[in-house]
Image (tube, rainbow, N blue to C red; front, top):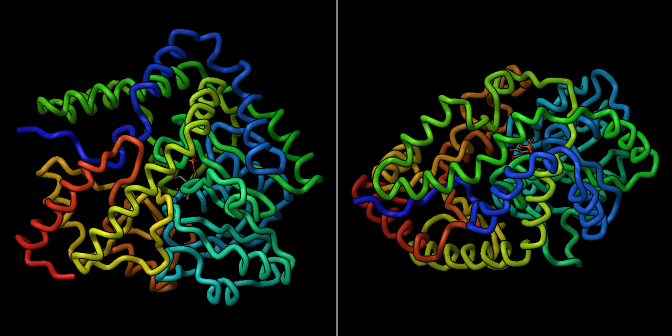
Length: 417
Ligand SMILES: Cc1ncc(COP(=O)(O)O)c(C=O)c1O
């Protein structure tokens, strides 16, 4: 008997209206590269979060564009947290900089301020504050630290975007990095942006954006197929054919990998590409839905906080019931074994953010300047993490089933908290 899939990665933003929009765009190839949505997205981002917005074909390219535009010199350092996605240090490398990993704060999975201070040198140009899984970083203290030391603060809002105009999140950094990737806070399948609050860096970003190349139509077509393929795969899963359908699509190259094998080896192509109008259209749609998406995430966060507390499971002290988390992290011994067992019950919790400090797991952390033993907290937490979905296509009913099966699985495996 097959049940609706519980997952992180099978089109988390792909609701029926989202899929219909993709289909409509797929039928209008003249809208793929250029059109009114690109500028509409720019205006909406500027209105919502302040600063000037510059759009690229991914968050990683937006970060590379920013680092070039601040004039990062060869050998200058950018502090980022251990427990991040490989594409972030890749962009620093590609800009000629040196990624310096600071350990995480065990309460929030965000930068540990004391460790950031220890790692600042005369070569430090910027600190990237990642609001991991939507848990807000301590922006007040980071802002003061960066101001005191004359360092730029880049907020990485790939995982978190507020729907409330008074939130400091996304508005405190000198720059805000946004990703419109498939499982991010808002999604256009692909795309990214920098919001700049510095006039002279904005001028450089404007030139950089103008020189970005359009993406090939064949890539945009595949981005637009992604929502349709995953929606179909989720339906086919009910008769046991979902995974086969996805394998087939991957082998036919209809689906593009989120992180390429070269990127996992620490290599990022130096070319910057434009954010396609079609991706901007889908991003704009999810940005319009942000209050609803965040309300849903808050509801699931609250549900997990309450139910997991009843079980006595470890909840990060930095999470509170009002957060709109992108994922809800829990920590157990033998996390891989638990995930493997859940998979046999149609619960796919592998999200690429487990068992590694530079994610996904098969990335070459050494090639990216990460030295094992340097960030002990991140290294131990990532071994035990199991994240629960909060995305727009995850229902409370599924969340309830997930917790029931998780509790049974822990019992069967004899795992205690
Ligand atoms: C924390 C974080 N920042 C930035 C990015 C880059 O986003 P993109 O996939 O759009 O390049 C990612 C991607 O996974 C991420 O997880």
